[in-house]
Length: 65
Image (cartoon, rainbow, N blue to C red; front, top):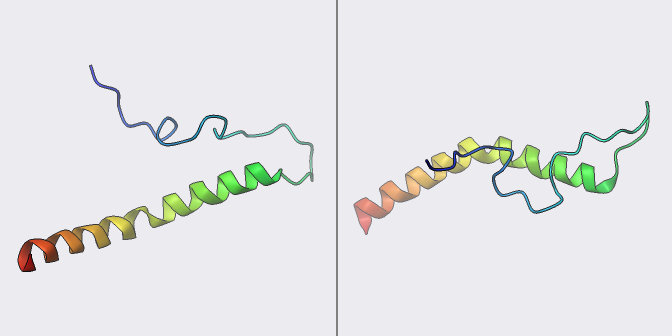
């Protein structure tokens, strides 16, 4: 059986998994955690517009070569 497309497994470099951290109350997350959260958020927000742009591009390429 093939491997499914899990969000947790897909395209995350080694060591960049979602680390919840064990910081105390009021502590700021580290720069690595902030960057990882930013990248994950941008990927989540841009997924639908990117699908739309790709679909339009494919249709235009099919129509006009």
